[in-house]
Length: 121
Image (cartoon, one colour):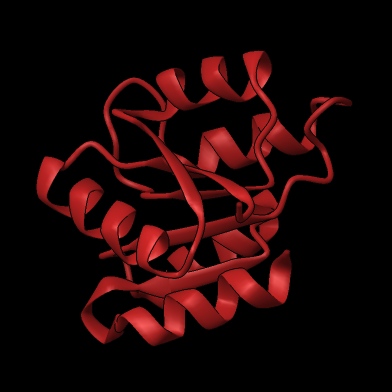
């Protein structure tokens, strides 16, 4: 089967939506409720890509991405941030943290997400 993707998103609605879009693209998908949960799962199982929200309790997507980039086991993991934060500053912060892609939820559509994921895998 397809690549193994972890979705980190604190909103159950968004988490479910992202999971179903990625599964419809043929991927195996696990979910995490926040950045701490995501980092724990990334350390204990093999994933091919992370799709993460930015604005989450306990650890933001920016912090999560930075921790991934600073972890020798995870440093090369592709990270896609999917967020409501659409300002230029937020986008730059995501890229500086090490995200491979930054998708703003307001301009989000599922084919765009699947294209980005396919490009990074």
